Length: 320
Image 1 (cartoon, rainbow, N blue to C red):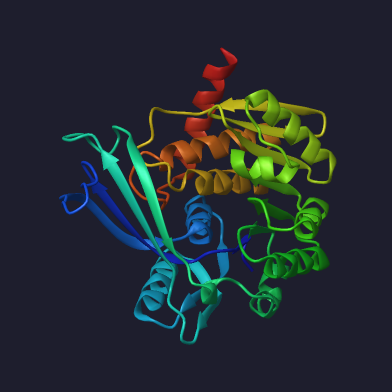
Image 2 (cartoon, rainbow, N blue to C red):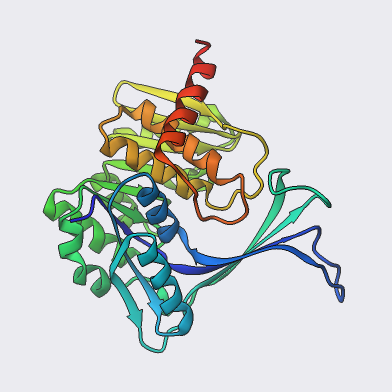
């Protein structure tokens, strides 16, 4: 059975790098192009697999050619796709990531991203999709649940994991107070970006200090570990009796797409290997930093490199 089951989005990613978007009626040359397996769920699954975990994914694609392609790519990545539904008559989700780069610059010079999403309702998870995969979820060591999926599907995933005694890492902020409350009761680990963190606590977070307070508040409501992004460019990880503020690692990102998903993969991999929450936070930060150096959200991770990057960043931060 897999170490990790990811419950979330499976999509086709089209990544384009341009010098600048054209004005109305104009055109622009594409300097960089990638077409590949993507979506938040798939990116997290790929990251976990690259960090040495066995992985299955529960999601939905259409019965079109792109759906066939992304499932083949996932299988080549070593991901079990038996829990992915091929919905009859549905169109596989497409994510278009357009990144403006400085003319003549490389992919590491930093860029401005615009993300366009075509995610038909038919390729969102339904309760019956999750229930059909309950056996897969029950055999995992950890279930990663994307809270951007419809509430009933999120609740079904939480119920299946709870019934089997499998810890949940929940990512994002759900719609509806009932789903949020269920997440806080059930999730062992909670991860959110700065906007999602504000939604979880019902107020805007304006600073890292606000984020620390929110992390403590959310942890007291149930999760053992809470990891939140700060609007000031840091990550806060809180646990029973402590917290740490982690600075962003590396320079300006070539493309921020996928940084949060890589953080989740690094966090999950560390915790499943018995690392403490602070170390797990550094692993997440390192995985994110290594992912945003290239265009597109697909991670390109290596366990040894993530460990080394995390260790070096922690030493620099601690002044040792």
